[in-house]
Image (tube, rainbow, N blue to C red; front, side, top):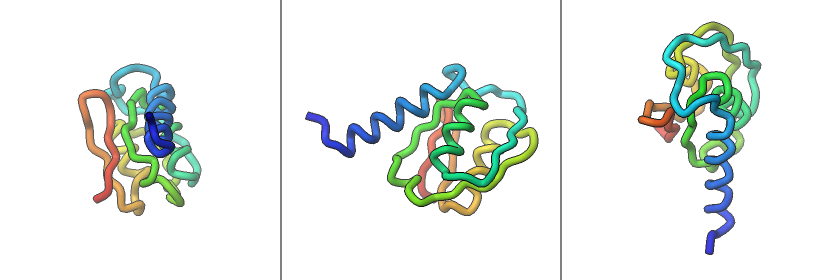
Length: 102
């Protein structure tokens, strides 16, 4: 039987993957105009705009704020701007991006 925390993790993974436009990140720069906002919301917006699947433990996102992002960036650059100051880092995977603690 799935525990509540496992269901939450599964739900977050499905939500972020559903936001992606495709199964792989768009390699070219994309224009981002995001205000400072909750980190979970910023990652959903990023996933949708970049086409990148984002793998992350939802516990890492609690009470976290993302910086505003304005400009044209490749996915890894945009993610670095979003995560700046959070104590988290993003890395590229075969399917998109993975976020973990530094």
